[in-house]
Amino acid sequence: MSLLTRIPRGRIPQAVLRKAYATVADVSGVKVAGIETGQPAATTSLTVVVKAGSRYETKPGVAHALKSFAYKSTSAGSALKTTRETELYGGVLSATLGREHLYLTAEFLRGDEAHFLSLLASVLSSTHFYPHEYAELVLPTLEAETLSAISSPTTLALDLAHQLAFRHGLGNSLFASPHSPVSVTDVKSFAQQAFAKSNIAVLGSGISTDALSKAVQKAFGSGSASGSSTLAPGSTKYFGGEQRVPLELHANPAAQPTMIIAYGSTSAPSPELKVLPHLLGGVSSVKWCDGASPLSQAAAKVPGASAEAIILPYSDASLFGVIISAPTSEGVAMVAKDVALALKAAGKGVKDDEVKRAIAKAKFADATASERVASLISTAGPALFSSGGVAAPDASFSALQKVSPTALGKAAKELFQPKPTIVAVGNLSVLPFGDELGL
Amino acid sequence: MLIGGPLGWSLAPLLKQHIPSVYNALKPIASIYANAAGHRKMGLRYDDLIIEEREDVQKAINRLPTRESYDRVFRMRRGILQSAAHKHLSKEEWVKPEEDVRYLAPIVEQVAKEDAERAMWDSMAVERKK
Image (cartoon, each protein chain N blue to C red):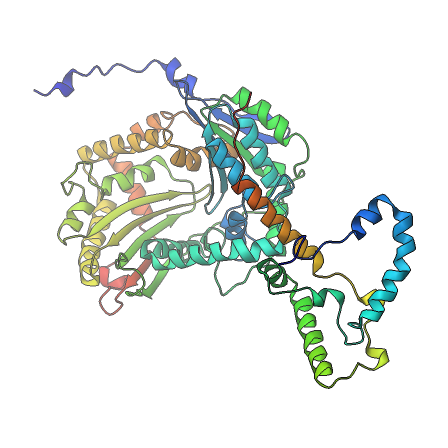
């Protein structure tokens, strides 16, 4: 037999896991959490999580503009100074925009946290928002990012799917559009509301909460915006609908026709919904193999095609979707028919062993999310606001373990009840409509 | 190329800061000179005369607010017409001393400062902290 059976399956001592996870401290109105991994880490990453995603924006595109304004001139120094100093320290600065949060991240060698935290604090408290920087540095970035989003069928389809599913709030596009111009004064007033102390949290990894709290106290203690934010998330409702967009085939040679079939729910994803994408699958766990999941079986019939189930979690909603893409629109149409059948089958009932496999995959996905900086930010960041703490990687295991085939079938049936959200990007004379797929 | 940056060099700021009495004494002579220079009679401001065939001044002109930019072009077109006709504007159309503000110079200085900062970062030597 294989050696695998001999690997000890004993439980990891709880103390080891708990050591890695820290509580949230409140430092002069700012929520702070430091996550220290077991061994002394060579690098530290600091992220300022701001509740200023596209759902909060006061004008279409203003959140995107604010993201691109990060690390420009502040009263601490020019954009050039920020960049050159970061290079000298050997750090990486980045800004990421989600539908709910804006993440300003600095990754650097351990020990440089004082410099980078004061840099992040100055970005929040004293960015000048110069009109000439907006025209010369920010607008070209906005244009390029919007253009590249439009020319990527998957990005475009996901953005449209959100718009159809939630219309406003969460449905707001992540990207600024040339059809609704944003002025620098709009960005400035949005920033003033967004960067209130009650609206931000600081998440560190590779640093203890104590050390981080001290640094935050020093950097944010004075001079940063105080008071509470007036940005309201609004309530979320699921609508659904269908949108078809012709693919500009000359734009990008790598662009493939894409379809998204999605369903939304107006609550944060339940354990059943977290397991569902892993049940339908689409991504092979083994190299050079199509995989055994229903979606990978469907995609395997067309060479070069892929069908992948995803769940996008939000604080008060979740969007479950299948992204289908193939080299030709005919291929997408073929795969989409099989995907629709697989979705219906999941709504009717699921097999016990398949559920077990999906639960194991869901656990693994949850646990690995906290091990990489990019995924840690997007999972732990929002948690600072909603639950006031960062959950240990195994916190969701017991809930996932309890998912039963009947509960999963019921959750799938409920999810697939309302009107689907269908986005088709490609050759519209070939790509099927929702009712042609029987959805 | 101009000596002392895009605006040329001037002792006036130094005088104003350190020896205000001399500055105040020279101010009336400066005003007489500015009037005699004749640009106000052509409907131009002093900053319209800054040599603009330079990258930094071009960048500064691009940074002008839209209204200032339109007004600048209007004054220049009017000035060119007057120059072609060998005439001054009528006296009530002359630019008054209080209207002759430095609308472009601060922006040119800002651009020059940015260029200097870039040159500084490009040519700095890094020393290990002791």
